[in-house]
Image 1 (cartoon, rainbow, N blue to C red):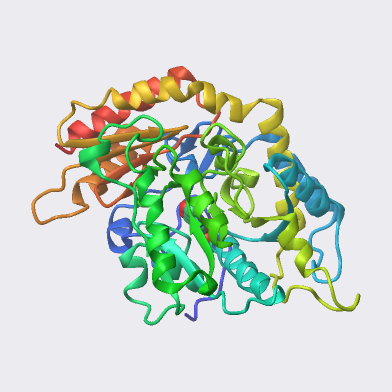
Image 2 (image 1 turned 135 degrees about the horizontal axis):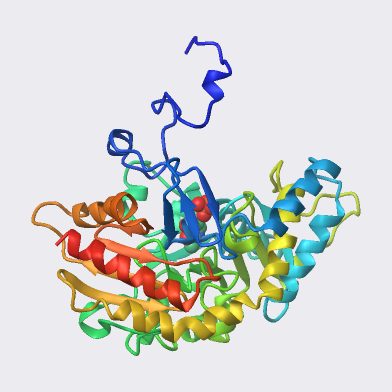
Amino acid sequence: MTAQSSRADNDLSAPNDLEAWWLPFTANRSFKARPRMIARAKDMHYYTPEGRAVLDGAAGLWCCNAGHNRDEITAAIQAQAAELDYSPAFQFGHAAGFAIASRIAQLAPGDLDHVFFCNSGSEAVDTALKIALAYWNVQGQGSRTRLIGRERGYHGVGFGGISVGGIVKNRQFFGSLLAGVDHLPHTYNRAEQAFSRGEPEWGAHLADELERIVALHDASTIAAVIVEPMAGSTGVIPAPKGYLQRLRQICDKYGILLIFDEVITGFGRLGTAFAAERYGVIPDMITFAKGVNSGTVPMGGVLVRKGIHDAFMKGPDNMIELFHGYTYSGHPLACASALAAQDIYRDEKLFERAKALEPVWADAIHGLKDLPNVLDIRTVGLVGAIDLASRPDAFGARAFEAMDRGFHDHDLMIRITGDTIAISPPLIITEVQIGELADKLGKVIRAVA
Ligand SMILES: Cc1ncc(COP(=O)(O)O)c(C=O)c1O
C-alpha cells in the first residue's frame, strides 16, 4: 500500500476503505457488502454511526459485564494513562498489578491465590497448559505431558488452545497440533436434555469417560484436564448436574490437574464470581479474561493454587522460576480498568444480580419455545441459547440471517454459532430490558422462518 496517511484517512465518521481490515471469525465478504458498523456504546446499548440504539444481547463478546462506557472505568483508564503508561512486568512491578491480583485471588474459592497475567483468553489457556506441564517437571514427574480437553470445547486460538479444543473448523486447517492430546465426550444430548433450565439432570456419568482415557494412556502420562464449566462458544452447553464434581473426584484419584476455563463464566456470568463457586468445585487453575475488566482493555490471566505456585519457588534467588510471560502481562491500563470494573461489580452487586435474575431470564428465553424452527432452548445464569432448525443444504444460514437482521432491522446484537443463537447480556440488564430482548429475539426468529 503506498497511499500516505492523511487527516481524511483518520476520519472515523465514515471509513472509505473497508478492505484492509481482515476481520476475525467473520464472513468478511458478506460483512463488507452489508457492514454492521458500531460507533459508540453506553450501558446496555451500542449505537450505529447513524445513531440507532442497538440492544446488546451479547455483552459485546461475552465480556462487557458491567455494561458499556462506565464512567468510573473510563476515568480509571484515563488517570492511569496519565500516570504510568507502560511498565515492564519482567523483573519490575507496579501497584495496580499487585492490587488487582489480590482482588481477583480474594474472589476465587479455596487456595487459588496466585495470578499470572496475560492479554487474552487464548493466552490464558496456553499459560495454564504450560504451567501444568512445567509443574509436573518441577515435581519430577516429567512423563505427565498429556493434556485432555473435551469435544465442543473452545479454548481460544493458540496452538495449545486449539489442540485441547474440540471444534473441528478451528483445527482442520492448521496441520499438526500439540501431540499427546485426548478429548472427553461433550455433554450435550438433545433427547435427554431438551429445554433445560440450569444444569441438566442427565449427563454426570459422562465424566466417567475420564476413567477410560486414564485406562488407555495411564495416569502417569496425563498432566491436566481442561474444561469450560459451561461450554459457551459451541452453543451454550451447561454442565450436567454433578458432572464437574465427578470430574474433580476422578482427577484427584489419579493426581491429574483440573483446569476450569472460565474466560466466559468468570466474573458473574453464572451468578457467582467464578463458576467454580456455583458448583462447589475447586479446580487447580482457573483461566479468565473478558469480564475481568468488562472488556475494556485486553487482559487475561490464570489463577493458580498455592501448592502449584509454591512448587516453583525454589532454586537460586536470582533464578527465574517460570520461563513464560508477555510484554503486556499486567499492563497498567488493563490493571486500572480491572480495579474499576471490580469496584462496580462489588458496589452494584452485579454477580448477585445475575443470580437473582436467572429465573426471570429463564422464563423470558424459554417463552420463545413455540416459535418456528426452535429445536431447543438452554439457559443457565444470564446465558441462553436457541437452536434453530437448519435450512436444507445451508447449515448456519438461518442463524446468520438472524444475526444480520437482528442488527439491521430489530436493533439487537446477538451471537451465533452454526444455527444456534447465543445470548449473554451485560449483568446490568433490567427486567424490562430482558422482556424487550426476548421480544426482539422473537421478532428475529419469526423473520427468518
Ligand atoms: C472459554 C474460552 N476460552 C478462551 C477463549 C479465548 O479468548 P480470547 O478470544 O480472548 O483469546 C474464549 C473466547 O471466547 C472462551 O470462550
